[in-house]
Image (cartoon, each protein chain N blue to C red):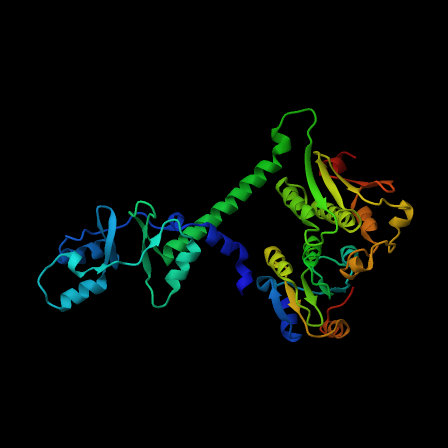
Amino acid sequence: MDFQLVKTRELLLELSISDVMCSQVVTIAPDAAMSTLREVLRDYGISGAPVVEDDRLVGIVSTEDLIRWLAGDDDDCSIGERMTTDPEYLFADQSVAYAIKRLEDPEGYGRFPVVDRHSKKLVGIITKGDIIGGVLLKLEQEYKEEEVRQFRASHIFEDIAADDKEIYLFYDIVGKDFDRAGKASTRMKKNLKRLGIRPDIIRRLSIASYEAEMNVVIHADQGTMKYRIKPDEIVLEVSDRGPGIEDVEKAMQTGFTTSEDWVKEMGFGAGMGLSNIKNCADKMEIRSDPGVGVTLTIRIWTEDRHETE
Amino acid sequence: MKLSEIVEKLDLSVKTGANSLDVEISRGYVSDLLSDVIAHAEEGDVWITLQIHQNIVAVATMKSLGGIILIGDRQPGDDTVEKAEEEGIPILLSKLPAFELVGRLYELGITGN
């Protein structure tokens, strides 16, 4: 189960305690009378409170301390005499993940006072409830931000006044690096989504772009991908500095491959890349200079173009 | 048939995408060539393969496949697992060799058409 919540775990490490803690803390002074504790706890519906003197945390007092005092039938005394001194606390700049760890300790506490690391002042209090609320709020914010980003991006062509509008995006490809292979296409796909491009077009473009990227990774040492996004078409130009294609017509045939064996063993180099690209593209062009490199240009027409043609 | 039922009936172990098993599967595709899968697998297919590197997740995502079954007790790398979780792609592990596994899938009504 460890790997299943990668994103959420990142979030818990990113968020600091100060992001989710409750900063409206009910505190009590050490010289307040023990007999006043009952009302404080009852009025605020809490089961304990940090004891604070000059903004500094000096102790914590809970229902348990109150019951013990009542049961002992002792005379009234100050909170300071009955509180737990040197209470455990957390720093405001520690991660929420760490707070969860401390709160989950079965022998530990259900709440921790939060102290500023530098000023040593009490700045809040944290419980599991604060964490749940804070994390949900953060998730909601991120979701909304992505929505706004997507909305803005999808309106970019409408919002910008010009006779002609184009967006260019560039990505580098590192040859022979199969661990990073496909990264450029994956990053691109996210952008296309934000730009509000139709899903079926995104799919065709991401297949074409993935196959083209793989060709560069397999055959060349380095390359670039250039996306030119216009309101009516997307042009993908993939260039590499590699050996070039000797016979373009032959390379187009399904199953024809010049890949090395170790590449094939990984499932690449099936000799189907170019025909897969062709099936996804509205237009495809290959320019090859043997010994210099290959430039592959793929055009996919978007909705607007189809309607007008 | 739901992917979760296939997991149960064929005793597969769920490596990733435990929350994405509630999908209906009617078709399958077997291949170890990525471009071949890109060309011939269809949306929602279960893909049977011995490849374990992270590009299988990219292919499955691109083609919106229902899930990947790795045969012969092969274990995906950490990168593959991480990426699959990110994309919500189920990776299921079988101890059986491909031929045997596909036969059993066929018996369950999962076909290649």
